Length: 442
Image (cartoon, rainbow, N blue to C red):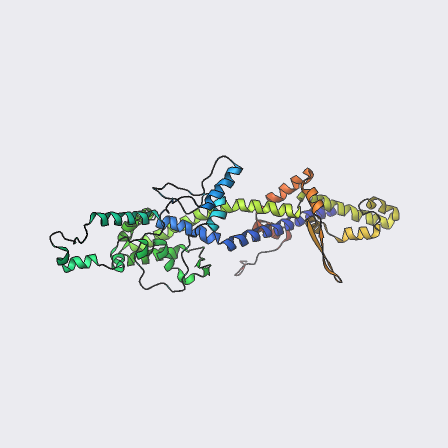
C-alpha cells in the first residue's frame, strides 16, 4: 500500500514539475516577444491616444493591413476588422480589435507612443493642440482654411477701420502667441502645440527610458495620472477650459471628465480622486482586454512547445509504471537467477548486453524520459564534449500517431493554467512554505 502511494506521489510530482518547466518556457518566450516588439507599451499608448486625442484619420488602408486582411480571408470568410472604426467621418481606432492586430499591426504599423525625451518635465507646458494624423487635426485645418477663404486679403479685425489703421488691441489679438492661447484656453494646429497624450507624457518623462527613440512606459499609476491631468488643467486655465477644448477636439476624454467634475461638485480635491478612480477602472478593463488577446498567443506557443518536446502526459504514467516493473524484475533476478532478465530483453536493442540495458533504464528516471522525444537531443561526454543527434523521423512518427494525441491535448490544457498555478500546486504537494514577512501569531 505504501509503495502504491509512493508511485502515485512520484507520478503527480513528476507531472507537476514537467508542467511547471514547460509553462515557464512558454511564459518566457511570450515575454521575450512582448519585450522585443514593445507590445505592452504600444497597447497602452494606443488606448491613451484614442481616449485623449480622439480617433486617427482613416486615410486609406496600409499595405500591412491589406496583407493581414488577406491572411484572415484565407482562414475564414467572416472578416474581423483590425481596427474598431474605419469610416472617414469618425476615423479609426489606434487600438487593434483582433489578435492579428495586436501582434502584427500594432508592432509593425504606426507607432502610437510619444517620442522619448531626456529632459525633465517643463516648468510651463506647450499649449493644447490637435494630434497629428487625427480627425481633430483635419477639422482644425479645415476651419482655418475656411476662415482664410472667407476673410478678404488685407482685411482688419474691425470693419470700421482700414487694415492699416487697426487699434493696438486688435493688433494684439491678431498677433497672440500660441503659449498665451494655451494658457487662456483654445485649440491649435499640431505644429503649434502638443496633443493631450503628449502633454501627459511630459509629466511622466522622469520615469521613462528610451526604446528605439520612443517611450517605454507600459504602466501608469492612477494617482500619477490624476496629478498629471490636474497639472495640465491648471496650466490650461482650469478644468472647465480644458474640458471645453477637449470637446472641441472631439476627444472621448471630455465626457468622463465632465461626469467626474459634476460628481465632485466642482471640488478640485474630489475631482482628482474621481479621475484616479476612473483611470484605475480603465486600466483594469484594458488589462482584461490585453490578457484576452495574449491568451490566444499562449495557446499557440503552448501547442508549439508541446509538439516540439513530444510531451505525452499519459505516456509519462505508463513509463513510471514500466520503470517500477523493471525494478521488480531486477529484484526478482537476485532470487530467480538470469532467467528473470528474459522479459527485459525485448526492451533492449538487438545485441545489447541486458545488464547494461537494465542499468541504463533504471538510471534514467521517468521524468527525464519525458524530454527525450524532441527532434534534436544532446548528450554530454567528459572526453568528447556534447554530442548532438537528430531524431526527426521518430519525432514525426510520434506526432502523427493518434495514440499520442490525447496526451498532447492534456499537456496543452495543463500549460494554459500557467507557471504560477503549477508552482503553487507543487509547493502545496511537497510541503514547501511561501516566504512570509513579519511575525507569526501564536
